[in-house]
Length: 309
Image (cartoon, rainbow, N blue to C red; front, side, top):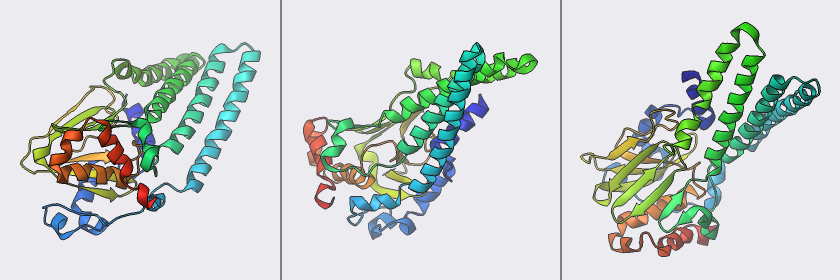
Protein backbone atom coordinates (compact mmCIF):
# COMPACT_ATOMS: atom_id res chain seq x y z
CA UNK A 1 0.00 0.00 0.00
CA UNK A 2 2.99 2.32 0.54
CA UNK A 3 3.65 2.88 -3.22
CA UNK A 4 0.01 3.85 -3.69
CA UNK A 5 0.20 6.28 -0.76
CA UNK A 6 3.32 7.86 -2.25
CA UNK A 7 1.55 8.26 -5.59
CA UNK A 8 -1.42 9.93 -3.91
CA UNK A 9 0.73 12.38 -1.97
CA UNK A 10 2.65 13.27 -5.13
CA UNK A 11 -0.61 14.06 -6.93
CA UNK A 12 -1.96 16.07 -4.00
CA UNK A 13 1.20 18.11 -3.65
CA UNK A 14 1.68 18.47 -7.37
CA UNK A 15 5.43 18.04 -6.99
CA UNK A 16 5.60 20.77 -4.35
CA UNK A 17 8.51 21.19 -2.01
CA UNK A 18 6.01 20.91 0.83
CA UNK A 19 5.87 17.13 0.69
CA UNK A 20 6.38 16.71 4.39
CA UNK A 21 5.44 18.43 7.61
CA UNK A 22 8.87 20.05 7.95
CA UNK A 23 8.40 22.85 5.36
CA UNK A 24 5.24 24.01 7.14
CA UNK A 25 7.18 24.46 10.36
CA UNK A 26 9.94 26.18 8.43
CA UNK A 27 7.45 28.58 6.84
CA UNK A 28 6.04 29.49 10.24
CA UNK A 29 9.49 30.38 11.52
CA UNK A 30 10.21 32.48 8.43
CA UNK A 31 6.96 34.45 8.50
CA UNK A 32 8.62 37.85 9.03
CA UNK A 33 10.50 37.48 5.72
CA UNK A 34 7.61 36.08 3.69
CA UNK A 35 4.93 38.70 4.20
CA UNK A 36 4.24 42.20 5.39
CA UNK A 37 3.66 41.40 9.04
CA UNK A 38 3.54 43.86 11.90
CA UNK A 39 6.00 44.13 14.76
CA UNK A 40 3.35 42.50 16.95
CA UNK A 41 3.50 39.30 14.88
CA UNK A 42 7.29 39.23 15.01
CA UNK A 43 7.12 39.50 18.79
CA UNK A 44 4.48 36.79 18.99
CA UNK A 45 1.65 39.11 20.13
CA UNK A 46 -0.43 39.28 16.99
CA UNK A 47 -0.22 40.60 13.45
CA UNK A 48 -1.82 42.77 10.80
CA UNK A 49 -1.51 42.25 7.07
CA UNK A 50 -1.66 45.25 4.80
CA UNK A 51 -4.62 45.13 2.43
CA UNK A 52 -4.07 42.93 -0.60
CA UNK A 53 -6.15 43.00 -3.75
CA UNK A 54 -7.83 39.71 -4.75
CA UNK A 55 -6.18 39.98 -8.17
CA UNK A 56 -2.79 39.52 -6.48
CA UNK A 57 -3.63 35.86 -5.94
CA UNK A 58 -3.02 35.19 -9.62
CA UNK A 59 0.72 35.22 -9.02
CA UNK A 60 0.22 32.30 -6.60
CA UNK A 61 -1.61 30.10 -9.09
CA UNK A 62 0.44 27.54 -10.98
CA UNK A 63 1.54 28.61 -14.43
CA UNK A 64 -1.25 27.89 -16.96
CA UNK A 65 1.44 26.86 -19.42
CA UNK A 66 2.70 24.03 -17.21
CA UNK A 67 -0.84 22.82 -16.50
CA UNK A 68 -1.69 22.93 -20.21
CA UNK A 69 1.46 20.97 -21.06
CA UNK A 70 0.67 18.26 -18.50
CA UNK A 71 -2.95 18.19 -19.64
CA UNK A 72 -1.85 17.70 -23.24
CA UNK A 73 0.30 14.72 -22.25
CA UNK A 74 -2.50 13.10 -20.24
CA UNK A 75 -5.00 13.93 -22.98
CA UNK A 76 -2.96 12.17 -25.66
CA UNK A 77 -2.46 9.18 -23.36
CA UNK A 78 -6.22 9.04 -22.71
CA UNK A 79 -7.02 9.11 -26.45
CA UNK A 80 -4.55 6.30 -27.15
CA UNK A 81 -5.99 4.25 -24.29
CA UNK A 82 -9.56 4.78 -25.53
CA UNK A 83 -8.53 3.68 -29.03
CA UNK A 84 -6.94 0.53 -27.63
CA UNK A 85 -10.05 -0.05 -25.54
CA UNK A 86 -12.26 0.01 -28.65
CA UNK A 87 -9.89 -2.37 -30.44
CA UNK A 88 -9.94 -4.73 -27.45
CA UNK A 89 -13.75 -4.71 -27.33
CA UNK A 90 -13.96 -5.50 -31.05
CA UNK A 91 -11.54 -8.41 -30.62
CA UNK A 92 -13.35 -9.68 -27.53
CA UNK A 93 -10.49 -9.08 -25.08
CA UNK A 94 -12.50 -7.98 -22.07
CA UNK A 95 -9.63 -7.75 -19.56
CA UNK A 96 -7.58 -5.66 -21.96
CA UNK A 97 -10.58 -3.41 -22.63
CA UNK A 98 -11.12 -2.86 -18.90
CA UNK A 99 -7.45 -2.10 -18.38
CA UNK A 100 -7.20 0.48 -21.15
CA UNK A 101 -10.54 2.05 -20.26
CA UNK A 102 -9.49 2.35 -16.61
CA UNK A 103 -6.23 3.98 -17.68
CA UNK A 104 -8.09 6.45 -19.91
CA UNK A 105 -10.40 7.48 -17.06
CA UNK A 106 -7.39 7.81 -14.76
CA UNK A 107 -5.66 10.16 -17.22
CA UNK A 108 -8.78 12.30 -17.67
CA UNK A 109 -9.48 12.58 -13.94
CA UNK A 110 -5.82 13.36 -13.19
CA UNK A 111 -5.93 16.09 -15.81
CA UNK A 112 -9.10 17.52 -14.23
CA UNK A 113 -7.58 17.36 -10.74
CA UNK A 114 -4.61 19.46 -11.88
CA UNK A 115 -7.00 22.25 -12.89
CA UNK A 116 -8.93 22.13 -9.61
CA UNK A 117 -5.92 21.78 -7.28
CA UNK A 118 -5.21 25.54 -7.34
CA UNK A 119 -6.15 28.37 -4.95
CA UNK A 120 -9.34 30.26 -5.65
CA UNK A 121 -9.54 33.97 -6.46
CA UNK A 122 -13.23 34.27 -5.58
CA UNK A 123 -14.53 36.98 -3.26
CA UNK A 124 -17.89 38.55 -2.53
CA UNK A 125 -21.09 36.67 -3.27
CA UNK A 126 -19.20 34.19 -5.48
CA UNK A 127 -17.93 32.35 -2.38
CA UNK A 128 -21.38 31.47 -1.02
CA UNK A 129 -21.70 28.19 -2.92
CA UNK A 130 -19.86 26.12 -0.29
CA UNK A 131 -20.53 28.38 2.71
CA UNK A 132 -23.32 27.77 5.21
CA UNK A 133 -23.46 30.00 8.26
CA UNK A 134 -19.92 30.07 9.64
CA UNK A 135 -18.89 26.78 7.98
CA UNK A 136 -16.73 26.96 4.86
CA UNK A 137 -16.58 23.60 3.11
CA UNK A 138 -13.86 22.29 0.85
CA UNK A 139 -14.68 22.28 -2.83
CA UNK A 140 -16.03 18.67 -3.04
CA UNK A 141 -14.75 18.19 -6.58
CA UNK A 142 -11.23 17.48 -5.33
CA UNK A 143 -12.12 14.43 -3.24
CA UNK A 144 -14.54 13.15 -5.88
CA UNK A 145 -11.79 13.25 -8.48
CA UNK A 146 -9.45 11.39 -6.12
CA UNK A 147 -12.05 8.64 -5.77
CA UNK A 148 -12.38 8.40 -9.56
CA UNK A 149 -8.60 8.40 -10.00
CA UNK A 150 -7.99 5.57 -7.57
CA UNK A 151 -11.00 3.53 -8.66
CA UNK A 152 -10.01 3.71 -12.32
CA UNK A 153 -6.35 3.00 -11.61
CA UNK A 154 -7.34 0.00 -9.48
CA UNK A 155 -9.47 -1.39 -12.31
CA UNK A 156 -6.63 -0.80 -14.76
CA UNK A 157 -4.00 -2.59 -12.65
CA UNK A 158 -6.25 -5.49 -11.62
CA UNK A 159 -7.30 -6.06 -15.24
CA UNK A 160 -3.65 -5.97 -16.30
CA UNK A 161 -3.04 -8.72 -13.76
CA UNK A 162 -5.44 -11.00 -15.63
CA UNK A 163 -3.58 -10.43 -18.91
CA UNK A 164 -0.02 -10.73 -17.58
CA UNK A 165 0.29 -14.46 -17.07
CA UNK A 166 2.36 -15.85 -14.20
CA UNK A 167 3.24 -12.58 -12.47
CA UNK A 168 -0.25 -11.20 -12.81
CA UNK A 169 -1.00 -11.80 -9.14
CA UNK A 170 1.50 -9.05 -8.24
CA UNK A 171 -0.41 -6.50 -10.31
CA UNK A 172 -3.72 -7.77 -8.94
CA UNK A 173 -2.42 -7.32 -5.39
CA UNK A 174 -1.30 -3.77 -6.21
CA UNK A 175 -4.71 -3.00 -7.67
CA UNK A 176 -6.49 -4.32 -4.59
CA UNK A 177 -4.17 -2.23 -2.42
CA UNK A 178 -5.19 0.89 -4.33
CA UNK A 179 -8.84 -0.10 -4.14
CA UNK A 180 -8.58 -0.13 -0.34
CA UNK A 181 -8.79 3.67 -0.61
CA UNK A 182 -12.53 3.17 -1.01
CA UNK A 183 -12.88 1.56 2.44
CA UNK A 184 -12.44 4.75 4.51
CA UNK A 185 -14.46 6.62 1.89
CA UNK A 186 -17.41 4.26 2.37
CA UNK A 187 -16.97 4.38 6.16
CA UNK A 188 -16.84 8.20 5.91
CA UNK A 189 -13.65 8.35 7.93
CA UNK A 190 -12.34 10.16 4.85
CA UNK A 191 -14.83 12.74 3.68
CA UNK A 192 -15.05 16.26 2.34
CA UNK A 193 -13.49 18.71 4.77
CA UNK A 194 -14.53 22.07 6.17
CA UNK A 195 -13.55 24.98 8.37
CA UNK A 196 -16.07 25.81 11.10
CA UNK A 197 -16.09 28.83 13.39
CA UNK A 198 -18.40 28.52 16.40
CA UNK A 199 -18.85 29.85 19.92
CA UNK A 200 -16.52 27.08 21.10
CA UNK A 201 -13.65 27.96 18.77
CA UNK A 202 -12.16 26.96 15.42
CA UNK A 203 -12.54 23.49 13.94
CA UNK A 204 -10.69 22.27 10.87
CA UNK A 205 -12.03 18.97 9.62
CA UNK A 206 -9.72 17.89 6.82
CA UNK A 207 -10.15 14.94 4.51
CA UNK A 208 -8.48 12.61 7.02
CA UNK A 209 -7.98 14.56 10.26
CA UNK A 210 -9.83 16.75 12.75
CA UNK A 211 -8.37 19.71 14.68
CA UNK A 212 -10.25 21.83 17.24
CA UNK A 213 -8.99 24.85 19.18
CA UNK A 214 -10.97 27.06 21.62
CA UNK A 215 -10.93 30.81 21.05
CA UNK A 216 -9.02 31.44 24.27
CA UNK A 217 -6.00 29.62 22.80
CA UNK A 218 -6.07 31.31 19.37
CA UNK A 219 -3.49 34.06 18.96
CA UNK A 220 -3.38 35.36 15.38
CA UNK A 221 -3.47 34.42 11.74
CA UNK A 222 -1.54 35.02 8.52
CA UNK A 223 -1.44 34.18 4.83
CA UNK A 224 1.81 32.40 4.01
CA UNK A 225 2.96 31.43 0.53
CA UNK A 226 5.51 28.77 -0.26
CA UNK A 227 4.57 26.66 -3.29
CA UNK A 228 0.92 27.54 -2.70
CA UNK A 229 -0.92 29.83 -0.25
CA UNK A 230 -1.76 28.70 3.28
CA UNK A 231 -3.75 30.37 6.02
CA UNK A 232 -2.00 29.70 9.33
CA UNK A 233 -3.86 30.20 12.60
CA UNK A 234 -1.33 30.40 15.43
CA UNK A 235 -2.23 28.82 18.74
CA UNK A 236 -0.82 29.51 22.21
CA UNK A 237 2.33 27.50 22.87
CA UNK A 238 0.90 26.17 26.14
CA UNK A 239 -2.41 25.07 24.63
CA UNK A 240 -3.35 21.40 24.34
CA UNK A 241 -4.76 21.10 20.84
CA UNK A 242 -7.49 18.55 20.23
CA UNK A 243 -6.40 16.84 17.03
CA UNK A 244 -6.63 13.34 15.62
CA UNK A 245 -6.57 11.38 12.41
CA UNK A 246 -9.99 10.08 11.43
CA UNK A 247 -8.70 7.00 9.61
CA UNK A 248 -6.07 4.32 10.14
CA UNK A 249 -5.71 3.76 6.40
CA UNK A 250 -4.86 6.37 3.80
CA UNK A 251 -3.90 9.41 5.84
CA UNK A 252 -3.90 11.46 2.67
CA UNK A 253 -3.26 14.81 4.34
CA UNK A 254 -0.40 15.74 6.62
CA UNK A 255 -1.68 17.01 9.96
CA UNK A 256 0.65 19.77 11.25
CA UNK A 257 2.38 18.98 14.53
CA UNK A 258 3.12 22.59 15.46
CA UNK A 259 0.97 24.95 17.49
CA UNK A 260 -1.11 26.17 14.58
CA UNK A 261 -3.92 25.25 12.24
CA UNK A 262 -2.84 24.99 8.61
CA UNK A 263 -5.49 25.67 5.97
CA UNK A 264 -4.50 24.58 2.47
CA UNK A 265 -6.13 27.28 0.33
CA UNK A 266 -6.34 24.98 -2.70
CA UNK A 267 -9.14 23.12 -0.94
CA UNK A 268 -11.36 26.17 -0.40
CA UNK A 269 -13.23 28.07 -3.11
CA UNK A 270 -12.44 31.37 -1.38
CA UNK A 271 -9.65 33.89 -1.88
CA UNK A 272 -6.97 33.15 0.78
CA UNK A 273 -6.78 36.77 1.92
CA UNK A 274 -10.56 37.00 2.31
CA UNK A 275 -10.58 33.75 4.31
CA UNK A 276 -7.75 34.96 6.55
CA UNK A 277 -9.37 38.35 7.17
CA UNK A 278 -12.67 36.66 8.05
CA UNK A 279 -11.01 34.44 10.66
CA UNK A 280 -8.99 37.35 12.01
CA UNK A 281 -12.13 39.46 12.40
CA UNK A 282 -13.61 36.97 14.87
CA UNK A 283 -10.28 36.61 16.67
CA UNK A 284 -10.15 40.36 17.25
CA UNK A 285 -13.87 40.94 17.91
CA UNK A 286 -15.05 38.42 20.48
CA UNK A 287 -18.30 40.31 21.08
CA UNK A 288 -19.42 39.59 17.50
CA UNK A 289 -19.02 35.82 17.79
CA UNK A 290 -22.69 35.57 18.73
CA UNK A 291 -23.43 35.68 14.99
CA UNK A 292 -21.38 32.54 14.30
CA UNK A 293 -23.53 29.77 12.90
CA UNK A 294 -25.96 32.25 11.36
CA UNK A 295 -26.30 33.70 7.90
CA UNK A 296 -24.74 36.92 9.19
CA UNK A 297 -21.36 35.15 9.41
CA UNK A 298 -21.64 34.02 5.79
CA UNK A 299 -22.55 37.54 4.69
CA UNK A 300 -19.56 38.89 6.57
CA UNK A 301 -17.26 36.54 4.63
CA UNK A 302 -18.64 37.90 1.37
CA UNK A 303 -17.86 41.44 2.51
CA UNK A 304 -14.10 40.85 2.63
CA UNK A 305 -12.40 41.71 -0.62
CA UNK A 306 -15.45 42.61 -2.69
CA UNK A 307 -14.88 46.34 -2.38
CA UNK A 308 -11.34 45.89 -3.76
CA UNK A 309 -12.11 43.25 -6.39
